[in-house]
Image 1 (tube, rainbow, N blue to C red):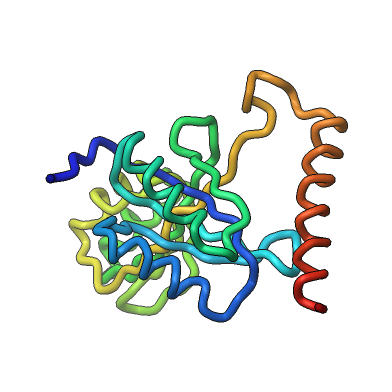
Image 2: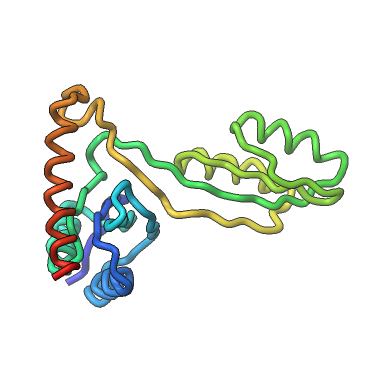
Length: 196
């Protein structure tokens, strides 16, 4: 049975800090035939938890299947599907561009239009940094492709839900207390497990 991919899905996974969790998580997904387009791992506001952001092609059925598989791993605390909820997503990219004296001014004008930052400059090259959504990065890449890209490196997508819009409710102190209570309860459980 062939799976049909309909759109890009963004999952935010809260996991316990364990040495082999990333290997186990990627192994679980690849063994079952899921394609991972992007993977980003970073610390959270809690010392004992990390956040993994995965971008994969799929649809509602595939994401439901991935979520069920992820919850089978013990260190997975919570899986958030950021695909259809209002969220903020960003990527970072560095471009090293071949630039002679005549092209330098054109490149600087393009970087100004896209709100990019020049992070390094030599007689023959310019290195720029761009942060933004995928569309902005692709548009900039199309504009500077004519100058000759010597090197580029791009991070994976990161994302976070918009609290002021989620659930059509404004952010309130009560919701913050409730969220902290849920997370703190889990953190206490994790600490108890670690010290027993």
